[in-house]
Length: 196
Image (cartoon, rainbow, N blue to C red; front, side, top):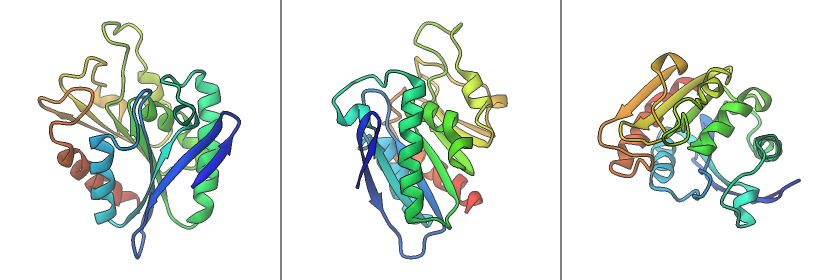
């Protein structure tokens, strides 16, 4: 499915289940894609938990850019995509999320799109080596419950447990969360069912 935004086309890949309980919308990091190991594992586990899963390749990535540019413009485009996706499943509770930059977008737009909760994978608390430039306010400002799943070796830092409804820190994992993506999927699936 293609959704036109002011920044160009965004692509939405949907995996459906027979009797859906909720809608989970996921997106990628700045330079990544929706086929990242952790996103695929979350998709698989969420399908097993009764969620329709939509993975969104944002317009900036479709256009070939490796950085999202303005947060305001990125969020505006995201809200347009979510409005379109929600028309397909209007009665389902929405949980949205993403990895890294996508987690930031999900936190910043949760209220605007009516999300019940946010899944933040590898939330980039600060740029590597710059802990003074914290983005914890994005977690705190989500306005809904946020699940954060980070690795303990993430150079972007690990959020404080007080800044999220639930923080899961996986030992030995870096920013890519690819050592045990199935575990990431399990954690997310166990959590999202509470919002169905």
